[in-house]
Length: 126
Image 1 (cartoon, rainbow, N blue to C red):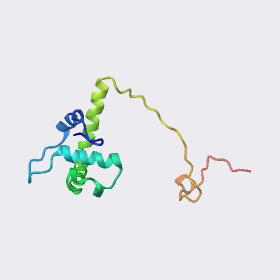
Image 2 (image 1 turned 45 degrees about the vertical axis):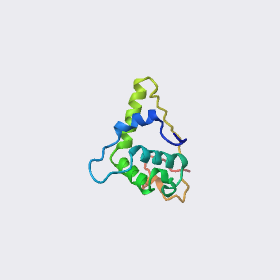
Image 3 (image 1 turned 90 degrees about the vertical axis):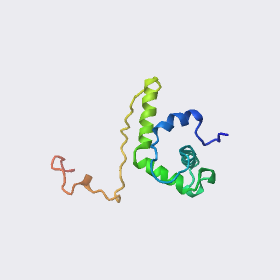
Image 4 (image 1 turned 120 degrees about the vertical axis):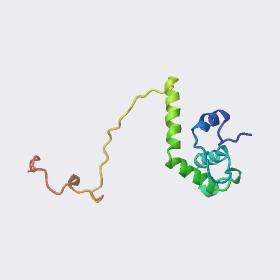
């Protein structure tokens, strides 16, 4: 039975070949179960310790998430998904640049734009 916050079979088939294989150590919890725990945690916004036991001990999805984040697994998933979507014509790479200016309060810590010397090109106010 697939639950609301878990990967569908299609999503799992996309992700499975992108996951690193473990070749050492003892038998570990199934990657799909752990990945579903990671997905559940981020879709619900709870703490790691609140991940349901059906995904294994909370430390297992946490540890595997950190390991996969550090070794680039999630970046690889994103690049692959983007490449497939682009090839299918589902992505339009239009870029929008926001040029909003945010001014800091006088007590924010910045002085004279980061310089202690006054600008010589700016005329003195009368």
